[in-house]
Length: 158
View 1 (cartoon, rainbow, N blue to C red):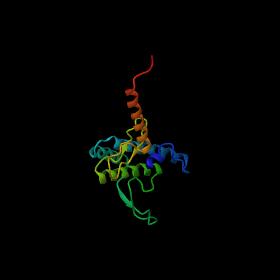
View 2: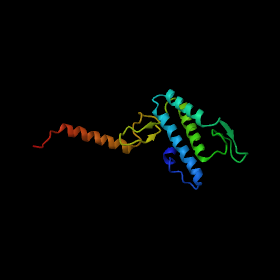
View 3: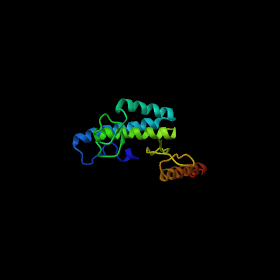
View 4: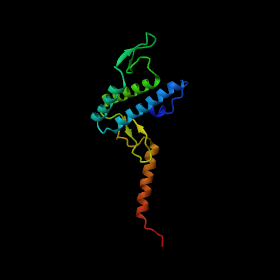
């Protein structure tokens, strides 16, 4: 996901130190937004968390073409030419909001593996995913298999 790749401390893209400091702070807020939406078990909780974040930290929704230099697109920041970090936060909130709106459930899940804290979008058909990747699912399945077999075998230590 976007926030996984561009999280706090990973924003060095040729920006000034001041822009990076602001962007890093907003990236932390964006990560908090995602965590708040993830912590919800139902769409109502995710919507309440996102509504609070949108109200407290973003500007009104509006369309902009930046004076005709781009296609029309939505903006949520306080200023159309807001710093990059503010854009990241507002865009993250908007993306999560659209996911809740479209699917009527929290936008993503946290991996069920106790050693992994990755979030993932659980979409598509089939059974609901519990793990972020096949690697995590396999690691947990193998660990459970080993635990069950070690419990079945009597101790041979004398």
